[in-house]
Image (cartoon, rainbow, N blue to C red):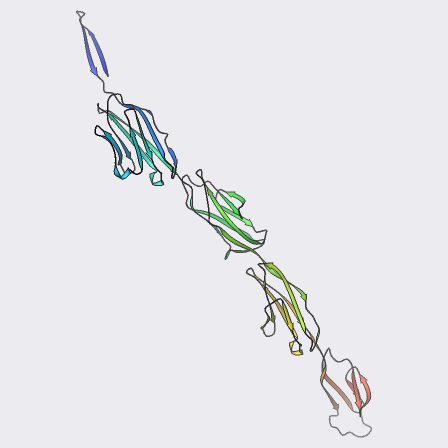
Length: 363
């Protein structure tokens, strides 16, 4: 490019002076800044320019390290071997493109294009490549002990992210058995457990790139057993069989045991306890014990054993067996019986003397 200076002398002679002005390259189009790309995709950065003269050389540079990606000069285009598998470069007199292949997060940063003409006038353009990726290492945790909780209780759920992604997570979602439960900006929920059973929970972390699910957490929502008696036979006549039976509600399904309260022994590991030919020594309290992972429930059954009088004995007052004719003698009859004896009969030489409800006879 040239400029002209015209000078008129006093004699009206015309003098023309020419002065060359250095031309400066200028960009007519540049990539958007920042240029966003999802991890794994390709991105092409394109520049167009007016070299304003003759092209001399140009360079693509990875700004974070200052490394040259590619350059072009009079000898041609050269892509640095360290980048040759990861980029495609086109440099023309009026256009240049830099394509990043299969972008990963380490490619995030600034890229600079430098161009110079034969007048050694140059210009640069810097573009930030913003590599976007989904959240990673999403985990769901709860405050349930051993992944078990009681019906009606409240459970805390926390969705955490090992790598937040780029851009950051902006909301979380909670699911139970793949049914959506709610959204949280913090990744935290408090939920009342209104149904018993086995449930699979997971959370999902979302950003503008996409969503990532956590690993599943299985929670058993249980109900502590409540014991109800179906059969507690009492009293039972000695020598007969006694069958005790209990049932219980609860989740998971309870395990059962019948326990002798006096000895602590387990008499039966099932809902049913059969005592064959029961004896008076077996009367007492029996406990139906139902248990599951959530807790225990108990009910007691007190068995009374009836038996006829035995071990009967008679005592006299006075206690010796020789008395004076005409004096009085008191007889007391005792026996072991259940229920207690309610009538006693006194005999003399096989003949009934008298009956007494108290077991005493004065004669």
